[in-house]
Length: 191
Image (cartoon, rainbow, N blue to C red; front, side):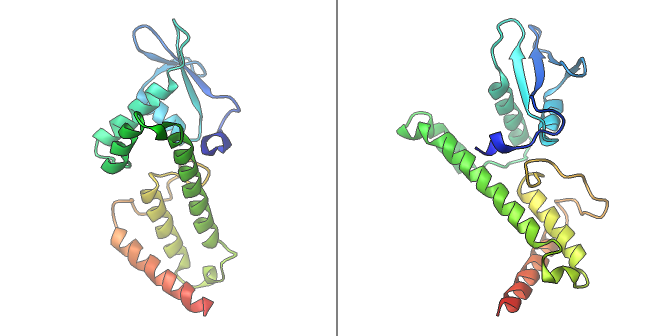
C-alpha cells in the first residue's frame, strides 16, 4: 500500500507521541510538548507518527490525523473537493465501506507514481534538458507540481524550498503557459 511503502526520514519506527490526561501531546524522542502543527510538520518531513493515550494505551493516531486534515481544510487549504468529502461520508453507511480504503490508497499511489514519472522526464535523460531555459521551466514545473500535490515530493516527503522557486500561488499562469509550450515541443519531437 502507498503508506506502507513510504520511507521514514529519521527512523524505521514511528515517532511516538504520548497524549496526557490534560490532552497535551508529548514527543518521546525530544522530551518536549508538541502541537498538531508540529505533528503535521513531522509527517511532511517524512516521519511516521504514532499517538498513544498514556492512560488507556489506545492508539489515537487516526483521530489526530483527521483533526490535522480538518484544520487545514477549515483554514482554506482545500485539498479535498466537497464532492469527495460528501462521498466519504456516504461511504461510511454503504457497502462500499470496505473498498474505500484500498481505493484511496491506490489512488494516492498512482498520483505519486505519476508525479515521479513526470519528474524523471524532466531530468538529464530528457533530450530537451540541455536546451536553454529548460532549468527555469523545470523549476516552474516543480513549483506547479508542488502546488497541485500540497507540497509532496515523490516518495511522500516535502522537498526543500529552492531559493529560485516561485511561491506556488504566484506565476501559475506562467507555469501553465510554459508547461503547454513544453508539451508542444515534446509532441513535435515525437513526430
